[in-house]
Image (tube, rainbow, N blue to C red; front, top):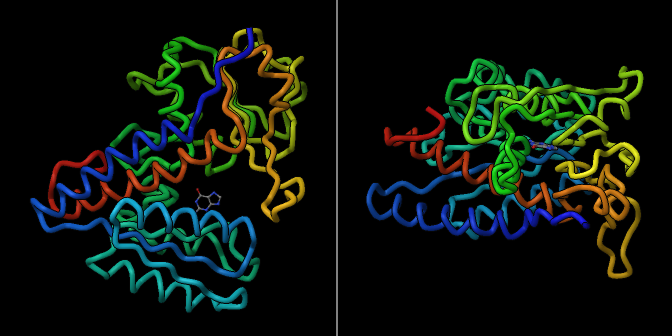
Length: 300
Ligand code: GUN
């Protein structure tokens, strides 16, 4: 039987409706409006489209949102000064610097400069450390979205064999950490992380009850690499051309058409993990605003 499609777009929409209501309530009861700044350096087409989508969503949800566009040749110092300005701005509860940054800018220095209490991406070492030891923190948006998608399947994660392909700081490392923790309802799994140094990835992926693919290679996972009935989460966003109306043509890291015949659940690209990532950024910003207002929050 073909897999059920995990429709990230509609799940994200449902969560957004909840956020929208909370934003109205937060404003009415406490006079607080969640504020998000997105900082874009240069004009990388993928980054431009991600940041535009983040801004559009923030606006739709009633956030105070600011877009900062800096030229490709901006100095590291200028970028750090801009971050400092937003660190001190009371109206801003979330700061996002879109990655990757141009080569002349030290990414580590930039991520360290963001106040960890406004680090809605969850990339600052304070949040990374808290995540690893299981303390409340900003969970990076893509892994956070994946956790919600897994919960939606109803498939037990407790005791499941999870294989993650990819060890990035943004996806692979945090999702592996989260899924091995004794978290409910999604956690307590046995997690294997595969990467470019792994000798025989298929020998691992074939054991997976849940396969999470963030390899950055179009159609990397083929049907023969997937166990019958596995849950397959495709994090890949690969631009493989342009549609006749000028939009980017995307494909994932999974050979969707073949793998959907074997999996129990599968995420499409686009419309799977992507919309969840943006939505969890909004959730983190909302929770940050609550924490700054001294209200109960999931991140503090
Ligand atoms: N580049 C690709 N994914 C992300 C993300 O989740 N956050 C930021 N800031 N940059 C990215």
